[in-house]
Every structure is written in structure tokens, then in C-alpha cells.
Amino acid sequence: MQEIGVGVVGLGWMGRLHATSYQRVPSRFPELGLRPRLIAAADPVPANRQAAREQFGIEEAVEDIEKLLADPRVDVVSICSPNALHRDLALTAAHAGKPFWIEKPMGVSAAQSREIRDAAASAGVATAVGFNYRHAPAVAHLRSLVAEGRLGRITNVRCWLVADYASSPDGPLTWRYSREQAGNGVIGDLLSHGADLVAHVTGQRVAEVVASTDVFLPERPLPLSAGVGHSGIKVGEERGPVENEDWAAALAHLDGGAHATLEASRVARGHRSDYALEIFGTEGSARWSFTRMNEFEVQLGEGGLEHGYTTVLAGPGHGDFARFQPGPGIPMSFDDLKTIEAAAFLSDVAHGTHRAPSATDGLQAAEVGEAIVRSAAGRAWEAVAPA
Image 1: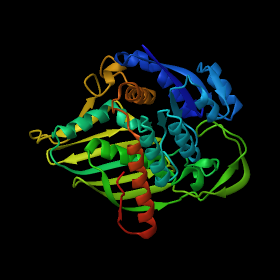
Image 2: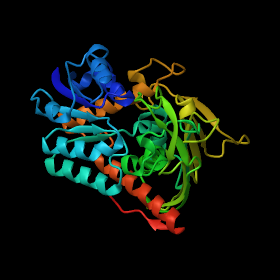
Image 3: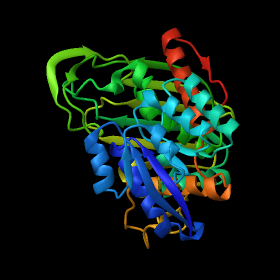
Image 4: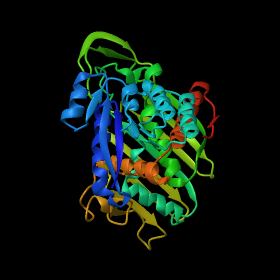
């Protein structure tokens, strides 16, 4: 087994998930012949450094990335910090010659994302971006249906990522609501997944958009403490302004001739994580929802006198399902999707494959997001710059 030394930057919820995902790669992807070793974690919060050592078995926990990158045992880096830090951390990793797996959005702007992509390309290092939903076995199968022509010519696609994690007006005004620190709000946070899913499954890039955006909760209480993810944060009485988007919707033209609708919300009461994709073609259609991640629906051909969808349980033969469960009806989890992503990244690093969503994919999603912002401001169609 080839050992690969890992450094994790940011030990919040996602950093912890990266750590456990690396640990599961040898058992789920034994043919790669790779054994990740959690060498170091970098995080300014003492409690997170303690968790890195005690909960996740990371050998060393430090405050800054420079010390982590200076460790010759660290071969690859996971960047799981707040968005505003992504650019500098990614450029530092690239300049140090370290391949990196970075969460989306890569930067707080398309310009930053392009810097990141170009730095990685110049350094010749492998990259991965956290577009985890494309790794669901059902989504992998939908992609194969399109590629094999079983849906005919793709005519239109619907994709929405609707959540309620920010629906409470008393939720804390964290960095996520700052344009400088988080970029374009729910567009980078959730709609970037939609842009990636549409392109990944159809093979067609989002080329042009017309969009509308809004901020439904314009003020939030200032936080008094840190937390992990969206929870565990105390707030005070003082409130401050929300600077970026709560909701966005767009019509899109794809470069292969299909049409798409994209929608994302972080304030949709009643929806926890209703992320869904529907693909329509001249010979059939298919749809998938994250709320029922381990199944999908298809309609192929005329279907005799009965029209409608057939529900299919994901199972062996669909994506990487068989690596995790023996048969249909036994569900995979969100964490499994990140394990697939970790394996793809490490395979690209060690074997020169191109399995992981790359920094170019991250840049393309960022360009879609910025075109949406421009369109909403100008109330007109906007071209999406190619990556």
C-alpha cells in the first residue's frame, strides 16, 4: 500500500468529514493501493485542534497552514476553511507543490476561482472540488442514461437546491452572510452544486442565464461565540445587515442546445435539504432527489398504455453503490459521497486519473454564479464565461 500524508485545514464540520473520508478509502477502494495517513490539521480554534488529535487521530494540530505545509510528511491538503480564506490557502498549497481538495465555492468570486485554477495548473498539482452530489449512485446512473442516448435528445433540465438552514430570523450573522467573506450567498453555497450537476449529467455547459435574486431576511443577530457548521453559536441583541443572496432563480441556455431552470434558497421553511434534478429528453426522462438519495425515477419510451415513472432503488451496478452496500434497499449516506470524492482525489494524485471534480469545474460553477448576479442586477440575459 502506498502511504499518502494528509493535512486538513479547518476542523469544522466539513474538515472533520474530510478526515473520516480519508480513513475509509482503503476499505472501500482497495484496488487503489493507497493508505492515507492523517499527519496534521491546521485550525486557529483550540477546541478544534484538540478534536483533531483526540477524536480523529490526526498526529499533529497547529494554528496556521504554513507549519502544516512545511511538514515534509504532508503530501496532499484538504481546504475546509471559511470561503474568504480559500484563495490564499489554495495558492499557498499550489506554490508548495501540494495537491489540494477544496470545498466549494473555491473563491469568493470567479476571479479568485480562476486564480486558484491557474495556480494549480501552473504547479501541475491535482485538484478536487467538493461537488459531492454528483457522486450519488443514482446521479451516476442518470448521467449514463444521458450518455448512452436512452433519453434521446436532451431538451430541458430542472435543478433546485432548496434548504431552510438560514430560515430563522434569529440565526446568527456569521461570515456566510458577508459578501466579502462568503461571496454571493446561496448562489455559491448551493446553486453552484446545481450548475455542476446540470453540466456533469448532461455534458452541456451553462452558456447563458437570465436571473432574479433576493434577500428575504435583511438583518440577523450578531454572534457571541464560534460553533461547528450552522449550529452551537450564541447570539446577542445587536443585529447587522445580510449582504448576500438568500434566494436565486435562473433560466439557462446550455451550449448543447438544451434549456435549464436553476433555483436555490437557504430560507425555505419546510424544506431541510430538498436538492433535486430532473432531465427531460425526446425518448424519456429521469429524476432524482437528495431527500430520497438512494432511489431515482425513470420513464423510458412509450411504456405501453401506462404513462408515468418507474421508481428504481439504487443498487450494485449504479455508480459506486456496491462498494458500500450489498444490495438495493440498504441506504448509502452523505458521508459515503465524500468518501467517493476522497478516493477520486487520491486516485488523481497517485495514479494520474481524472476522476474528481476539478478546479476547472469549480471555476465553471463560479462563472455561472457571477453571471446570475449580473443578470439579476441588469435584468437581462448574461453570457457565462467559459472556464
